[in-house]
Amino acid sequence: MTQLPRLGVNIDHVATVRNARGGDTPDPVRAALLAEEAGADGITAHLREDRRHISDEDIDRLISALRVPLNFEMAATEEMQAIALRHRPHAVCIVPEKREERTTEGGLEVAREENRLAHFIAPLREAGCRVSIFIAAARAQIEAAHRIGAEVIELHTGAYCDAHHEGRLDDRNRELQALREMSAFAHSLGLEVHAGHGLTYDTVAPVAAFPEVRELNIGHFLIGEAIFRGLAPAMTEMQRIIAEARA
Ligand code: PXP
Image (cartoon, rainbow, N blue to C red; front, side):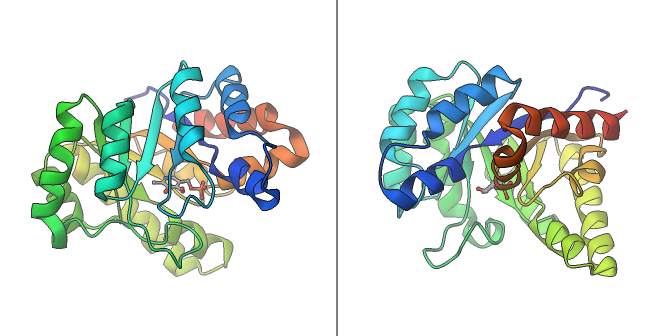
């Protein structure tokens, strides 16, 4: 349990900047390779239904260029399932998706869609992908994720991070406590626990300190910080904070 959590670097927002002008730069695959060189344990990319950042071609290129595992984030749609089955990435993380949202705002409602999701993830698992389900820190969702056969859950840290940055201390502490308890609960069911969304240098330490957390997926903040420090130094500082928290 003293093992450090893996750092998965989400490169979606390199593609956001590229797409703002419609050309080829900055290239998210170049950022992924740079992150890999700087010690990322994995790369995360979300192919959204509306292709607002990562494109199909980016996924093709990531699959052939990366040496570290790709964590392919996707909504539970037939189109995405077919793409995942074609590429067979190391991991598939199922996320909720709404066209009007700015980012993935909440966790997946697994409990409400248990049957459909169980059938949806079965072929992905048979194809050898590790299936992760992105959920809120709620017991019912974790139990449902376990029942449908997921091996991994990723806890949505967005509500905790928002409360922290908005100075709502009671909410922050309550969200953090829920994340702490639900990490332990998921682990007790045999699920591997990941966490992510909205994490920054200021918010990552308490989450990294949970002994059950095996992976942290961080994107927006690191890509933003890379503007000022460069991607490798931005990651190094994140890795330092994570290691210190775990120690
Ligand atoms: N984990 C999941 C499942 C996500 O959907 C996202 C955002 O795409 C992240 C982690 C990373 O969030 P952020 O970009 O806020 O660090």
